[in-house]
Image (cartoon, rainbow, N blue to C red):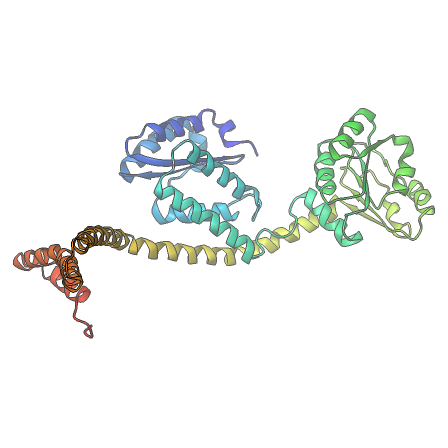
Length: 402
């Protein structure tokens, strides 16, 4: 898929500039991937910011692409970010790459000074949810790309690739992509062969392997546990005879041939040679499709975790105002305590009676702590603010009473 910002040149710049210059936007994070552009903002006036952003986007996006953008607020926005980070909203369900992309975008916004308390909390929560979903569900398990499906298939057929010998026939993009995945599994040796020897040498260098001429294919196959064939030829590059000759020197050692060429480049009857298994792109597609289906079944479990985390955020929001008051009470109480403690220390150093000093200290603290409460409670009663009086009654009821 083409990048959204390539389809619509200047969109990312326009959105970022709008957020940067909007007087009501206090924080923002912009996320760009190959198929999405998302902006998250904390604002003093959501409605005003929304109207201005809609105008910016309307100017930047051609009419035929306007169905692909939307604006979400509050809980819908939070849930969407959680869904994105978990990989539920991805082209490949459960992909891990999006989590790294969100982390990188968040880190970039922090570095540039665009993140405050609101988005710091939101994105940290999102990253935690993403980790939890990947730990507690199977949403990101199983290969869904040809490269990883090749590894999954190979490990099913011949066990761990660590210490095995791998041969790559072909040096194009597909061969390189899959070869890098296979080489990352710790094989003992990686051989690379290609019609153009120089390209074989380049890929072999990237993989830390050895380039082999096409005239030595039989020898290379004979020394390998796994052979990946990914060429663009229109004929069989690996014949049955070649495989038979290779196996003659190691008849009891299994050989896996994976042919991802289109059309296939390994003779169809090569897989009937004893101790040889031949798999094609169809086999890999089947593995990927099976894993995609399995991942989709895990979406409901992932969404349940998201709902649980959303409920926790809602609870935190309810106590947020109270927490601010509690912090204020704590700070005020500490100031009073420190002031009166210093007075008591000074009195004691001047020979004051300890009992009288302690009595004066406690009385002074109690008086200062209760002074504003008593004053405001009387004022509320005079103004007929019964709800304030009732609340105070619940908060400061004598011990033993509800």
